[in-house]
Image (cartoon, rainbow, N blue to C red):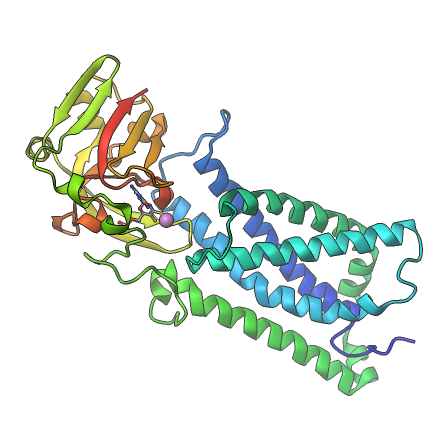
Length: 370
Ligand SMILES: Nc1nc2c(c(=O)[nH]1)N[C@H]1C(S)=C(S)[C@@H](COP(=O)(O)O)O[C@H]1N2
Ligand SMILES: [Mo]
């Protein structure tokens, strides 16, 4: 009856690949939730400013586990696709629910991986707002995985606990093909990770031939959005540029020279882009703690940051209290020993430890103490 018996289409293969896929999805889901919470913090959520590289690691894991899940999902679909042709199509109500949940699961998983991949490649061939849709479907995928796990638990148990030593000889060639299939799956997964992880893992930088870091950038750091595309060249270069610092009903204005005359702090801090690339650099500028004290405010207050950029999605950000007290939260003026160039946010930009790149606002024009 089972035409696919004894090949890669066995319960055992499906369960083994499924287990690794489940682990990859689990890591991807949790790190995705972290990234979402950091960018849209609910009231109870507190994201520390240390360790400096924590977000870099969680977001790196998010993208790496997502990449690993692609070959794993393909292998999993390959191992179970004969079930699509099972007849009768629906045997009972539970069977119908199970099949429907698998449809939702495959659809959501496929959607997440494909849109995620396009996103890291900075290609947006769609009109919806990626982060919101990606976030919503993560819950759909996670929910349907749980249903699937619950339904399949007996099969998974049986498949993962079965002793294979006898089986391989029993089925001869079939056993070999099963092992060959698994080995190919691991190899494809490992290659996909190695080919891309260098975007965030410095040791793999030269190994990762498919790495998608946004150009090599100037001053040794990639550039996501250039000053030209943000339309800020004129405003950033203007003679009359002043940093406005608003605290209550007082507004202080600092020229670039005045900012340069305040105490300067230098720190090695990463840009950790949500798109999965990260890069450490040496930043120098005015510690936000020093800047706040210069305007008579105790650090610990929340800061609203506005860019000279008029309409971009990332033209504004909020630096929460935990970050304004950290002496490494900088209004950076210099990068790797040079004056920040226009693409990196001249005249000044936010660089705070343990933050997603999207919140490291460039071309800052105004800070407002909340
Ligand atoms: N004003 C403004 N700031 C911004 C952005 C932007 O589009 N506009 N992009 C952000 C993103 S997504 C990243 S990853 C970092 C990249 O900084 P870099 O170009 O100096 O590497 O800047 C952030 N700051
Ligand atoms: Mo980014």
